[in-house]
Image 1 (tube, rainbow, N blue to C red):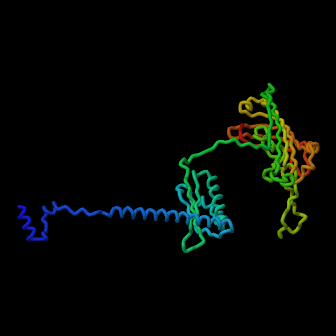
Image 2 (image 1 turned 180 degrees about the horizontal axis):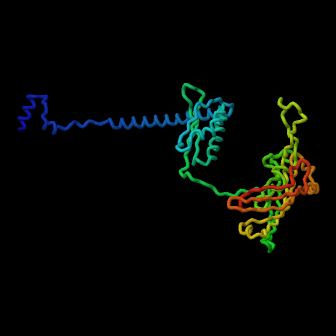
Image 3 (image 1 turned 180 degrees about the vertical axis):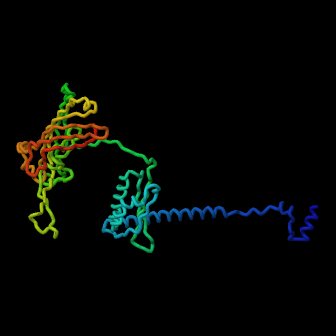
Length: 371
């Protein structure tokens, strides 16, 4: 068999192996240099990637430093191309745009845009309808260089019902009042005194004017007994009808031909310092019908005064003069309490008033919230 095999091999030096012979043939064991070469290539490639990553990071850092350097040297002009709002499913775009679009589009430099974007985010947070607000600046279209897109990303509150509880104080005012039952006809004596002062803030505040809406004004028809703050109540005088005044300035017009017939009137300026006091005696009326309905009578006495302290007027202030110029009134009336409101019909008599004060003796109606 061996010779035959050798003879067969000699007869055909290049035999074509059959399937069985192919299975039994072993390939020569060549030294494999492929895997070490592949590992070396991978190491070289990783080193190249690390080098490229470090270079890219350094290049990015240089770009950022160059941008900040340019922004710190001079204003960089920019124009807002579009404002994109994302994340709002219940809040209308018009509401958000009304708060921030005008502000953002007013920016003409990158520095202004960063500042206005921060202000816009604060405005939207103050609406109390978003859990979070983010304003992002993105590059504008490539065909419009020097432009940017402002992206406003909001997250709406998950709970549609919200509320807050707080305590609000007015430290520039104080109010002291008390009531004493007298023991007959369900009578009670209520008395109180209120005072307040307001001054502008900042350097040289005593020489600066105070804000007109923040000043104190006396007068009106509100009852001092049930008002949370009775400082502004002065029965018998019209609302804002007491205190420092100034001749009203009018703009001449062609329709006014006779200046002597024009009556400009007076403007009531309010005061920076105010004091008011009241005393009220309430009692049941003798008729049982009125007693069952809760209708009762009262007699009252009220007084108050204002003074200006700002713009250097504190130099002319004196407590003696302030006490002599108190306005006062007295009267009697009937009180009709209901579930919806408290109605008063009072007869007011002016005890003391000065020029330009709008006080009047007579019947006065007053409506206020029930006690």
